[in-house]
Length: 431
Image (tube, rainbow, N blue to C red; front, side, top):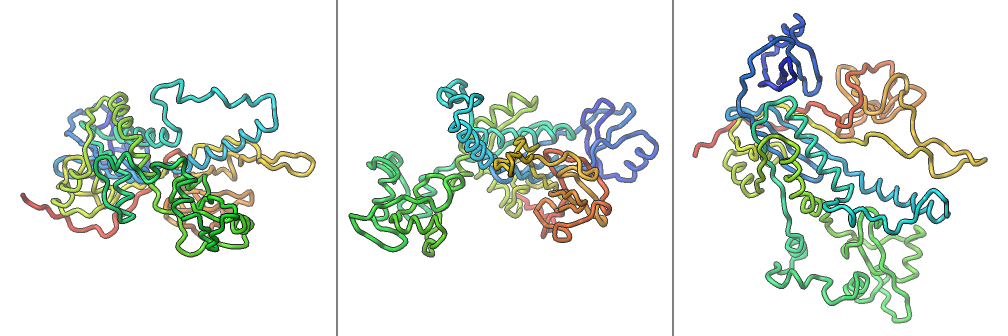
């Protein structure tokens, strides 16, 4: 599918007449605007007649499904993988700032009374803010190449207490059960964890009143959080051995299921719809998961983010494409100038790689042996680590730059074309 813009840059209906496109390009009546998705711009006046195109958005924390459809066929389908490294980067930044404050330097102000969320109404954590912005950016990118007439967004709201009860095999909460949670009538989380584990070391089984007990994070607090299912009771002896690496937790002592993604969706749900209505001059409406499931099953489609987006667009019987775009959001740049550890003599090593290495940048899209890849790592020797977006390495991560030809320069969103696996023949279920 080739996407078309008129001479003023406004989107027209896409075309699959590739021969016509080649003639326009060869006769200099059109120019290539973007390679992936392949978009051309006409260099002459043309009619601006378009059809209604609906955009369906399957919002998510780890995967976002996008599909633009007419009544007869799908004209665009994409799966976007948003960034999930923001929480880790914020934790690293917080540790560095805390270290500077502890050294009593003049240039790091005290931390008290600088809480942004108390000054600005509607403030959201940066980890949530970046996910909302990635949804909006993806929708705007599609609106630039297609004449979108209406947008439908499915946002989910999860009942976390009900999910926890189903996982643990407990009765489902009803009425006042939502106010009487698992930590009800306990002073804090530590007291609850000790009571849950019956004041017994979960490593050696010690149950002695004279032994000091610790509440240990199964996963680090940075990645696992302070939820009770990430905490376990250990005696002081086992706690020291575990941190020294001389022992391990018994089998079965693993972190419980995380509901971080469900929490993300609950926080960003209303804000996403409100901002879309403000920033995009197209009618936007929300929908629900049970409606999507009904139309997906009625149309005989497999469960996937793209198929869900097709059903969300209100055209579940539209003929799907054989390929889709896989897009991955990456970090724009590394803003940490120096490494945290000093070299001998007080020399501070730079933490930022050169902008260009042998003429290539990080995340440049290159052509190697007739296939497209992305540069995920560069070496001064000229041997690069090139991969596909799913992380598949080429030549064990060592390919000479002399064998590479640049296709597209690095962007914040890396896109490649993928064939839809196990694509079934299109079937239309009549009512």
